[in-house]
Image (cartoon, rainbow, N blue to C red; front, side):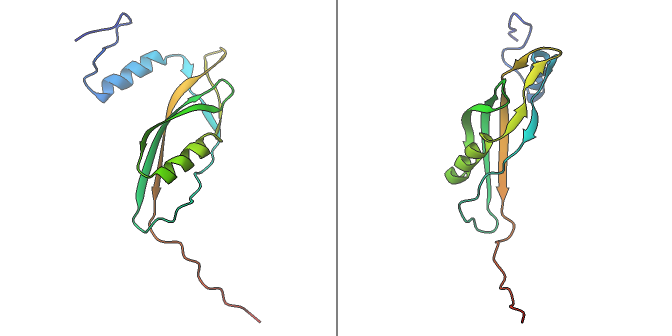
Length: 128
């Protein structure tokens, strides 16, 4: 097993190894705290039973805004674009070291849309 100068494995054997390594790297860093969340707009009508996902990565800046967005996975292009637009409107309290200045950090954001039934307007009855 190869190790880097910091003692971390270069080729992790499992997801738990990755999580442990990230925890060690992030020791003493307070993660960003979500202040404002915007839902993705639904511009497309999806049939009942639709299940789409989008996984995005972005940098939460020292100002608490998501600056760089990369698409890791997107099942539906329209939904993925809506997620990117919504994510750019999210606001955070930035990450920071204990008692220190704000830090820019990479975060992964997962979005999912599950349509369980179609939204049809029911006719309203006029009352006289």
